[in-house]
Amino acid sequence: MGRHHAHRGYPVDDQGMIKLGADLRVNFRYLIQNVAKKGKLALTIVRRRAKLCRYSCRLGDRPALIPSLNGEYPPYFVYGPLVFSKATLNTSAPQ
Image (cartoon, rainbow, N blue to C red):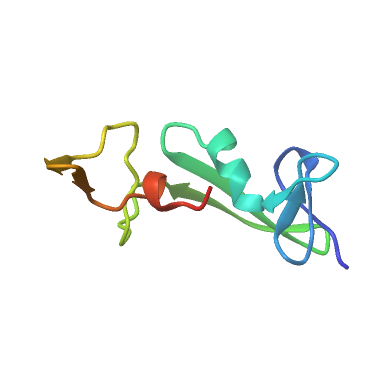
């Protein structure tokens, strides 16, 4: 399996995963939240140990079928013993 490098020297495998602990592997995109500054992300493409190009990406909200709550409380409606609420990433994720 080939090795590539991501931010701060985390090795990225051919499946795009990085190892964060003894038993934890996550997608390399996990690092984006740690390195993005003011909604921007600087990227450098490296192939065969040669820097090919640099990019500066602007990060923004992506529309999704099931949105995130972003720290807000979900809207809800109580009808007798039932409570209705819209689906969000926070409430529909498997536990």
